[in-house]
Image (cartoon, rainbow, N blue to C red; front, side):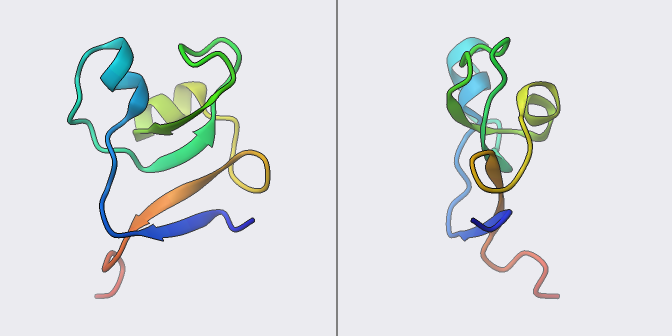
Length: 74
């Protein structure tokens, strides 16, 4: 599995949405969470802050960076 995927719409951070009730924080990763996270080892779309705190890494079985279509085309 690649460590990144191109998307057409950026999802919201699942951890902020469900834990902190802040639904509009953009997610930059789709990754497995640590067992001490609110998701308890499940997968989540995460913002950079939540990924740095709860993310398990990138790659097969771990997660992917979400790249919005058109980012980096400059």
